[in-house]
Image 1 (cartoon, helix red, strand yellow):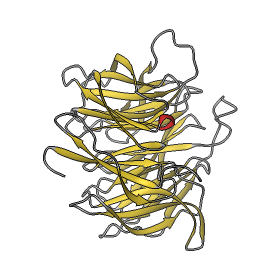
Image 2 (tube, helix red, strand yellow):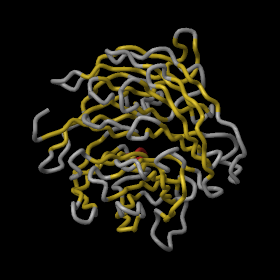
Image 3 (cartoon, helix red, strand yellow):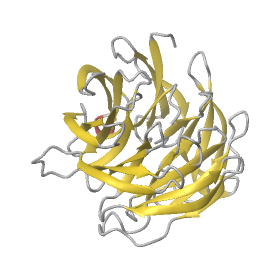
Length: 363
């Protein structure tokens, strides 16, 4: 990796008989947006979400590993990142003892990784050793409560993502099944979770992923089932949420089926982006930093089908989008003044790509 390029990792699905073997990596040219041909980085079973420790030296990947240490269910794998090549060397794997996993994130101090089991309705945490290795799972919490009105998709609790507050005090969990955002206090040293409150979303929203503004004042949530993006104000003392605004992620007049997936804030905090699966597009919103509210700027095609995940380069100049159903990763140039996206025509093939992680990304 040089000053003119940046390494990017791709997580994938690895079905039996499929083309993917696990995690791949490529170099993004920071001048042109071109991606090098993806190289195989590490073997893993369905590494559908990836996260880096803040020091960038350890990568964590969800994996289906059968039984680890006598514990069944979803597991988290740790890999040492080789600084020169970007290669990944296996460190260890730890199971939750619960269901398969859907999301992982590392706390700002780099001492704890938290994971979500969408199917088992659980949140779990792992302590991280100094060398990045995973300790045994702690803090396994099961979600319960009234379900949302969508009988097909909200038939039980479905936590879907973890977002840490910038000050490292709290974490927020979007639960698609309960139409609720749960708030937890956590102790990174012991990797334990304590309930700190929650807020109900609008019925049928199906909250999926969220991001917090760098100043810790606002939480932005993309609602998978409602195809909308909601802004919440965060109480600075308690972390409690107050709903401010909700906007559609789809253009007016669209009547087809759609579910949302990822949400990102631009590094400078001026724009918010979300992905639509069905409409197969990326929605761009301008952000009022003082009020936290958003204004829709545009909705553009993602360059493939089922854009499950995307990410912005740390300099904010490029957006890289993983389109699962067309096995391609597309690159967009970001207008720094307006946030608008321009398709570059640059794309690479990554089989069943579902996660995009930059080497300098800290969650």
